[in-house]
Structure formats: structure tokens, C-alpha cells
Length: 98
Image (cartoon, rainbow, N blue to C red; front, side, top):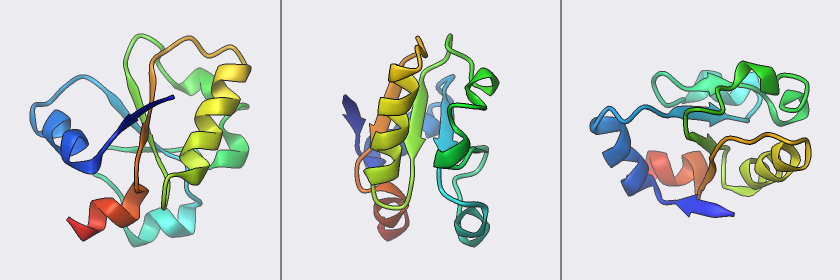
């Protein structure tokens, strides 16, 4: 599984790289803090809603700490998703601590 740190993600976003930030936390968590422009699909819905993702664009997956995002990537890969998936190490906790 490919990983990216929050510093690299910030750089990619500031450079306006064409990517999707997929937040797999629950809506109440997202309401507290979220990355601007991110797409929220909770982990439990990610397989049913994977058609909402664009496999032509890299998808950077984030959760609170990095565990659910890794599970989402594993589930999407097992379900046949063909796009690039990258896990954010440390998740939103790391993002907010910067």
C-alpha cells in the first residue's frame, strides 16, 4: 500500500494537483474538521459508493488516524477498483497537529 505524509499531501494540494481526497470518517467526525474539497464516504459505504470515485484521478484516502483509510484501500482494491489509492499516514490527527 502506498502511503503519503500530511506534509506531502499539503504540498500536493497547494500545487493544485488533480487528485481526490477521500475522507472515510463518519459524518459527525467530518463536521468537526475536514480538508477543504474532500469527498466524504464513510468506510461502511465505500464499496457501495465506489462508482462515485474517478479511477483516472489519484485518490488520497484519510481517516482519523490511518487505520480506516487503510481498510478502505484494501476493500476497494479487493472489489476491483483500478485507480491509484494512497493512504495518509497519521490521518486527520496528524493533519490537524501541523
